[in-house]
Length: 264
Image: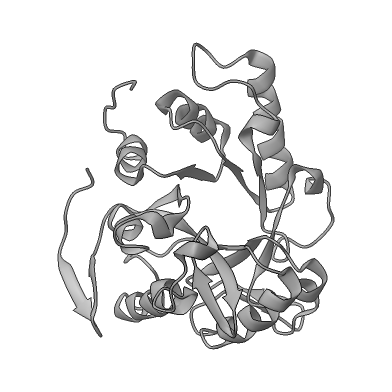
């Protein structure tokens, strides 16, 4: 378990501060944890994922509609606490500045949801990376939109507070990196290895080639539904995969902090 640290409370938002920042750690379906966002921050995660539904004029967080509650909005669970934390830390999510990704997975109609999301994000322009007049400014949090992506509407936004989550089919895209900052895809659609034995040489080479091509275009890489196995994490890490997703926050943090893990 990551070491505990001093706890602060800011405008009712309490969090444990100063873990070792782990920019490669991605909290898949982060909202399922006991303390959405904060459990990941306590472990030093550099990326969190929130699924959203447009309900009326609200952006509510959950994986299924039956889970939705007006008390669990994108703003209340993620944007407002991040803003408070960044203000306390003097401009960054952690005391040591570095990349922090908020991956927003849109579950409802892409165009209608983005029309509302765009207005919400503009309220947090002081903490969100932005592209305006052709110039990109990296700030404390980079928002990337996945799921039902309103690609044209996102690309035409001015200013633009979010990028698009690409797929392996976008590896050769000439879109600027701030518009297409991330390449994501399902692990099992491209790799059969699940962590048993050694990773086959051809799959290992394929993984490295994907990362190489993405990095050459200034993009980062993520796979979803990767096996929760230290051998898989090791291969992803060694290949330079930028975001390693997990539902097991403490276990991945221990791995990335180079702590011993059993093979179970």
